[in-house]
Image (tube, rainbow, N blue to C red; front, top):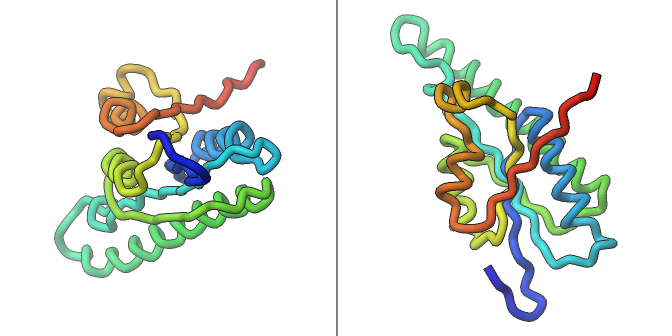
Length: 162
Protein backbone atom coordinates (compact mmCIF):
# COMPACT_ATOMS: atom_id res chain seq x y z
CA UNK A 1 0.00 0.00 0.00
CA UNK A 2 1.56 3.27 -1.05
CA UNK A 3 1.68 6.25 1.26
CA UNK A 4 2.17 9.90 0.56
CA UNK A 5 4.47 12.36 2.24
CA UNK A 6 5.49 11.49 5.77
CA UNK A 7 2.64 9.04 6.40
CA UNK A 8 4.05 5.87 7.90
CA UNK A 9 3.43 2.49 6.35
CA UNK A 10 2.27 -0.19 8.77
CA UNK A 11 3.91 -3.53 9.35
CA UNK A 12 1.80 -6.03 11.28
CA UNK A 13 3.87 -8.75 12.98
CA UNK A 14 2.29 -11.85 14.41
CA UNK A 15 3.84 -12.82 17.73
CA UNK A 16 3.52 -15.90 19.91
CA UNK A 17 5.57 -17.71 22.53
CA UNK A 18 7.80 -19.57 20.06
CA UNK A 19 11.45 -19.09 19.14
CA UNK A 20 10.29 -18.79 15.52
CA UNK A 21 8.21 -15.73 16.37
CA UNK A 22 11.04 -14.13 18.35
CA UNK A 23 13.45 -14.70 15.49
CA UNK A 24 11.02 -13.20 12.95
CA UNK A 25 10.47 -10.12 15.11
CA UNK A 26 14.20 -9.59 15.55
CA UNK A 27 14.75 -10.05 11.82
CA UNK A 28 12.10 -7.53 10.81
CA UNK A 29 13.43 -4.99 13.31
CA UNK A 30 17.00 -5.40 12.05
CA UNK A 31 16.02 -5.12 8.38
CA UNK A 32 13.18 -2.58 8.38
CA UNK A 33 12.79 -0.77 11.70
CA UNK A 34 16.16 0.26 13.11
CA UNK A 35 16.24 4.06 13.46
CA UNK A 36 19.57 4.16 11.58
CA UNK A 37 17.82 2.75 8.48
CA UNK A 38 15.62 5.86 8.38
CA UNK A 39 12.67 3.94 6.93
CA UNK A 40 9.17 5.16 7.64
CA UNK A 41 7.30 2.27 9.28
CA UNK A 42 4.96 1.81 12.22
CA UNK A 43 4.99 -1.64 13.82
CA UNK A 44 1.83 -3.29 15.14
CA UNK A 45 2.50 -6.45 17.16
CA UNK A 46 -0.48 -8.80 17.24
CA UNK A 47 -0.86 -11.73 19.60
CA UNK A 48 -3.80 -14.07 18.90
CA UNK A 49 -4.90 -15.44 22.25
CA UNK A 50 -6.91 -18.66 22.26
CA UNK A 51 -10.16 -18.65 24.18
CA UNK A 52 -10.36 -20.60 27.42
CA UNK A 53 -13.14 -22.74 25.95
CA UNK A 54 -11.05 -23.75 22.94
CA UNK A 55 -8.08 -24.50 25.19
CA UNK A 56 -10.02 -26.71 27.60
CA UNK A 57 -11.95 -28.54 24.90
CA UNK A 58 -14.37 -30.35 27.19
CA UNK A 59 -17.66 -29.70 28.90
CA UNK A 60 -18.94 -31.50 31.90
CA UNK A 61 -18.37 -31.83 35.61
CA UNK A 62 -15.41 -29.76 36.68
CA UNK A 63 -15.35 -27.51 33.61
CA UNK A 64 -16.62 -24.50 35.58
CA UNK A 65 -13.76 -24.82 38.07
CA UNK A 66 -11.11 -25.23 35.39
CA UNK A 67 -12.13 -22.29 33.18
CA UNK A 68 -10.91 -19.46 35.48
CA UNK A 69 -7.56 -21.21 35.91
CA UNK A 70 -7.15 -21.64 32.16
CA UNK A 71 -8.23 -18.03 31.54
CA UNK A 72 -5.64 -16.74 34.03
CA UNK A 73 -2.93 -18.87 32.43
CA UNK A 74 -3.81 -17.58 28.94
CA UNK A 75 -3.64 -14.00 30.21
CA UNK A 76 -0.22 -14.64 31.81
CA UNK A 77 1.07 -16.10 28.56
CA UNK A 78 -0.23 -13.12 26.57
CA UNK A 79 1.42 -10.70 29.02
CA UNK A 80 4.72 -12.60 28.85
CA UNK A 81 4.73 -12.68 25.04
CA UNK A 82 3.81 -9.02 24.61
CA UNK A 83 6.29 -7.82 27.25
CA UNK A 84 9.10 -9.76 25.60
CA UNK A 85 8.24 -8.26 22.20
CA UNK A 86 7.99 -4.71 23.60
CA UNK A 87 11.32 -5.15 25.42
CA UNK A 88 13.00 -6.34 22.22
CA UNK A 89 11.68 -3.28 20.36
CA UNK A 90 12.81 -0.97 23.16
CA UNK A 91 16.32 -2.52 23.27
CA UNK A 92 16.67 -1.91 19.54
CA UNK A 93 15.33 1.68 19.84
CA UNK A 94 12.17 1.04 17.83
CA UNK A 95 9.75 3.70 19.02
CA UNK A 96 6.60 3.54 16.89
CA UNK A 97 5.19 0.26 18.20
CA UNK A 98 1.74 -0.74 19.36
CA UNK A 99 0.62 -4.09 20.75
CA UNK A 100 -2.73 -5.83 20.42
CA UNK A 101 -3.96 -8.99 22.08
CA UNK A 102 -6.97 -10.36 20.24
CA UNK A 103 -8.86 -13.52 21.12
CA UNK A 104 -9.27 -15.90 18.21
CA UNK A 105 -7.63 -18.09 15.62
CA UNK A 106 -4.25 -16.59 14.62
CA UNK A 107 -5.02 -16.93 10.91
CA UNK A 108 -8.16 -14.81 11.15
CA UNK A 109 -6.79 -12.42 13.77
CA UNK A 110 -3.73 -11.55 11.64
CA UNK A 111 -5.68 -11.09 8.40
CA UNK A 112 -8.19 -8.88 10.22
CA UNK A 113 -5.36 -6.82 11.74
CA UNK A 114 -3.95 -6.24 8.24
CA UNK A 115 -7.32 -4.86 7.14
CA UNK A 116 -7.87 -2.82 10.31
CA UNK A 117 -4.48 -1.09 10.10
CA UNK A 118 -4.27 -0.93 6.28
CA UNK A 119 -0.92 -2.71 6.60
CA UNK A 120 1.50 -2.80 3.72
CA UNK A 121 3.23 -5.90 5.15
CA UNK A 122 2.44 -8.83 7.43
CA UNK A 123 5.35 -10.65 9.05
CA UNK A 124 5.03 -14.13 10.52
CA UNK A 125 7.57 -16.69 11.63
CA UNK A 126 7.71 -20.12 10.06
CA UNK A 127 7.62 -23.19 12.28
CA UNK A 128 9.10 -25.22 9.43
CA UNK A 129 6.40 -27.88 9.40
CA UNK A 130 6.41 -30.42 6.61
CA UNK A 131 3.42 -31.02 4.38
CA UNK A 132 1.79 -33.59 6.68
CA UNK A 133 2.02 -31.48 9.84
CA UNK A 134 0.79 -28.42 7.91
CA UNK A 135 -2.19 -30.42 6.66
CA UNK A 136 -3.06 -31.70 10.15
CA UNK A 137 -2.28 -28.63 12.24
CA UNK A 138 -2.89 -25.93 9.67
CA UNK A 139 -0.29 -23.35 8.80
CA UNK A 140 -0.83 -19.78 9.89
CA UNK A 141 1.79 -18.50 7.45
CA UNK A 142 0.31 -20.46 4.54
CA UNK A 143 -3.19 -19.21 5.28
CA UNK A 144 -2.02 -15.60 5.62
CA UNK A 145 0.01 -15.81 2.41
CA UNK A 146 -3.19 -16.70 0.56
CA UNK A 147 -5.69 -14.47 2.38
CA UNK A 148 -3.98 -11.31 3.68
CA UNK A 149 -4.43 -8.28 1.44
CA UNK A 150 -0.82 -7.14 1.61
CA UNK A 151 2.69 -8.44 1.19
CA UNK A 152 3.32 -11.38 3.52
CA UNK A 153 6.85 -12.05 4.71
CA UNK A 154 7.43 -15.50 6.18
CA UNK A 155 10.67 -15.42 8.14
CA UNK A 156 12.40 -18.76 8.60
CA UNK A 157 14.76 -19.33 11.47
CA UNK A 158 18.01 -20.85 10.18
CA UNK A 159 18.50 -24.48 11.08
CA UNK A 160 21.28 -25.28 13.51
CA UNK A 161 24.28 -26.80 11.81
CA UNK A 162 25.82 -29.77 13.60
